Image (cartoon, rainbow, N blue to C red; front, side, top):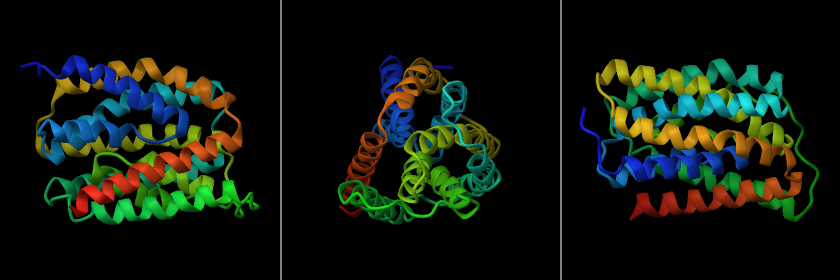
Length: 248
């Protein structure tokens, strides 16, 4: 196996991406996928690589969030099975169909969600009634996450916060479920493609695993209003940038 010259820099990318993801519940897959895309890695290989690395980083992250009591078990189980099924279906489609036709709709959804989150923080409105967060949310997010090479946390965390879930539980629970979604997605793509950039996987997961415990600690100590604002701003920037890129 030939080691790509970009691998050392991917350690830093994995660290930063996981630090952002672990602190605000989103950004790992999108950040890492964007870097691999600029390196010319095909979409299906990109998704397989990122999700393989995310399996390890999400495992460390979910264990860290469990340690700091950031996980809501009821929401976790409502998202788990639909998320895994959605990831498998999305990975299967990605292995055979170009992803660029789906991405504009994902970015548009994220923009709307970010505005909902920010409006509730700025206007100090009463949170929406919190019900079961799946299975629709888990299934759709798992599917779009596999198609786009990332996005589970961006969709799930921001949607849960918009529905009134406390940010630390939205972030921690989202990070816990993505471990299983990423595992299912990476296995599906590996079985259908028969290849993966293991050197890039190693670079991403080393950096990500190092950042996961730090991010979980930060999440347990960040005030709810500040966390919700950070989530809204991150989703808005990612959504606006992604939509602009796909439409130009």
